Amino acid sequence: MAVQRLMKKKQFLPNFSCEFYCDEKGALAGLFWADEEMKLNYEVFGDVMSFDATFRTNRYDLVFVPFTGIDNHHHNVTFAGSLLASETAESYKWLLQSFLKAFGVAPKVVVTDQDAAMKIAIRDVFPDTRHRLCMWHIMIKVSEKVGTELSQDEVFKEDICDVVWTDALEPAQFETQWCDLMIKYNLTSNSWLSDMYNLRSDWIPAYYRHEHMSGLMRTTSRSESENHFFGQLTNTKLSLVEFLSHFDTAMESQRFKRSKRDHDTRYTQPRMKTNYELELEAAKIYTRGIFFDVQEEIRLACKNCMCRREEEVGDSIKFYILQVNLPGLHEVLFTPKDMVIKCSCNRYEQYGLLCRHAFCVLRLCGIKEFPKKICYGALDKRCCSKKDKSFEF
Ligand SMILES: [Zn+2]
Image 1 (cartoon, rainbow, N blue to C red):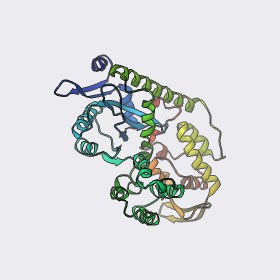
Image 2 (cartoon, protein in one colour):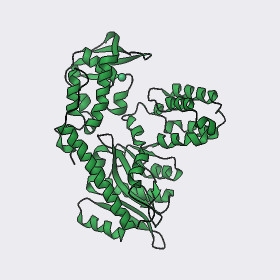
Image 3 (cartoon, helix red, strand yellow):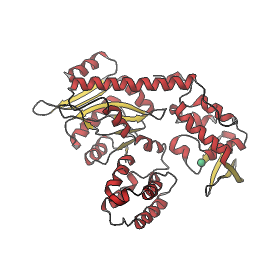
Image 4 (cartoon, rainbow, N blue to C red):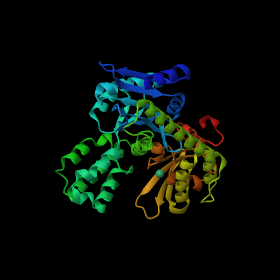
């Protein structure tokens, strides 16, 4: 019944994909589906994708595996849904092949839980995709792996989060700080932490901070909220048809909220916090959620950053920027002739958004318009313009 329903959609809806396979007894072993809007979203936001076996969903005991990305409002967006009877490498391979058949291209980066079967499937079906482990899943396990006393120690939690979640460390700095932390808390013989350390290049930001848009991977780690989102709408007593209806309702809700955010971005005006012209312009360029992030950087640039010294480097000027109450200087290289700006903190490379140090330099140089190369480069798709209807699905 459920499969028939999806196959009918495939017949009548443009660009709807549905794949399924059965085991030797004829029972449903895998079901995959994606509609046209999901595909449009993947085209725009599909650089980084997470997928996870979330929960057993229905009375047939199939596990629900949604494919998720992050949209230009920094919210979850669902690319596809699927159900699997078993979580083996073979069934995941079938799933990823179905994904490829529907979407045509693999994502650049995939974020998953630490699962051996998924790992094999990704390696075999998406050979050119970078596979990262979800930091969120790993960090959630820390409490249960370090013993009762430490799991309740707030200072320990803060210390480990400072080392793990930061994107400011280089690999060698991370390694030193991690080792110091293990010694400080007597954890050098904890085998789970040692295993996680050995896998560090797969999940610690220090090891991919120079990769384009790597910051999004941390945002993508919000699969818990995705589980919650679908979890509200399903239970183990559902038939498959009921489950699919609930899924459709969840998608409608997600799409409604997204168009509301688009609407708010286009037709409402946020309050300005500085008198720097770029803040007002940012409100016109970015979606509201992203604007608040940019606005905070501009506010800090105006209120907390200052230039210590500057020097000419060919056609460019190198500025040394200090942030009040923080140690160290950030080096910002600005080339006025082609409006290229680069900061040593790497925020732009990681998140596609300028940092407070760069805004400080632009302000010092009297720049009153957003450098177009920065706003509308490879990342323009994530920066929904109020005027740009192409992002209004
Ligand atoms: Zn910076």
